[in-house]
Image: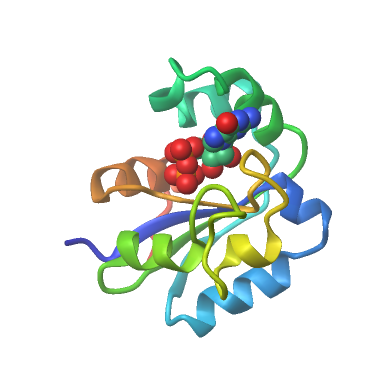
Length: 138
Ligand code: GDP
């Protein structure tokens, strides 16, 4: 199992001014921040990032949401990072998310759900490269 994952604080959470609280939950859970920036995704970049979902009925809405404002991609490190981070963020739909998870606290809906977390080691590498290509993350 790998030790890296890619988190994104999504535009809804950035707009609600929850960046600081979410980062605090991430670091308190033992993740190390290896890379961090704020950016607004272009349509092309968001479409590429979510290419795996292109056949899903909500793909267009997802791309629109993810380009609606700034987001904060963060490269994270921890043992078993992918699974550990998905545990910390909780279920996709905040109504199903467990107490103490980031989505339970900060997500408004299944679509606007505050944070992204990679779903496999392979995707973590691809997604970290999407935002931090050409940078050496120590
Ligand atoms: P995740 O791995 O928990 O983020 O969930 P998925 O891989 O299933 O979906 C990716 C992202 O698409 C979610 O985090 C949501 O932002 C969005 N999403 C999921 N389901 C829906 C939906 O039914 N409608 C819309 N508009 N967006 C959705």
